[in-house]
Length: 403
Image (tube, rainbow, N blue to C red; front, side, top):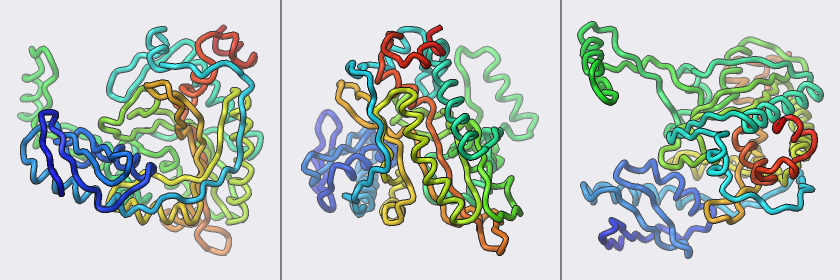
């Protein structure tokens, strides 16, 4: 390891092996979960070295040991898989992509950014978010007869464990804590906040984590409701889900939120049924993108798993081609085009059927799949494509959101 500590608190470190741009991007994004002392790890363009950006100088040796172990497991990822494109939409709007969309929405008073991965919105942004959700629900009802439903924002830890989330994405979980049922502890907390200028948090020993979490994936709450069901063919369900994923310092406007909305479609049943719904979902993505006149591709992808399991799980996902992402272009802070995942189509095999006792008529675990659309990212992408002036928007959309 080659270490050089300078005034900017940066340390250069050799990579265990050379990595490509895809793996380098994963390393930078996931590096915020390595240590509280690390702000970011940035991989050099040649993929041979990395720079660890420290937030303080305490316990440097221990922190760098964590960084080295993190880089070791992340560098084992196999990348460069063939990316297959299943559908593509091209917009008709010939105008340039809009720069600084997040800032522009804030300046117009249509978005309030709390700065913690939460946003409030109104006006055209609210109307657009509602329209995206309604249009997707309309397509699912038309194509699959999927009736609207509702699920809670909180989910119990046992369900998340059954869903495999603690094994795959433990860094993204948000646990719900409550004051312990103790008179003195509660009074101490009350008194501390009775005359204070800012909030005082309770002592950690006075907070009880009771096994409830904020839901990190829209589809999860549906599976317990299907326990014991038997399917000859299959069934589809759809709803708007409130989703929470802890993103640490990766939070950035509508691009990456802590709390967001997802229009979800879950399909469950026989292998043939699930495969058929998945295939019929592909043109619906294109239809939705065409309605809002946006460039869009649906292509193979993998999830950002936690570092120690990333290599194995990404390899399995890529090999099985079970995840397809909806990729839509936006502009980064420098005005360069980048693509963001605005949703995905996923096949789960019989995983949830086995875990939640959902079966076919032969008592075999049922197959499942889902489609999730990130509403706020669709909003960001739409304003990127058409800007803030109503005249550039498709007429049907314009009449709904700028009236």
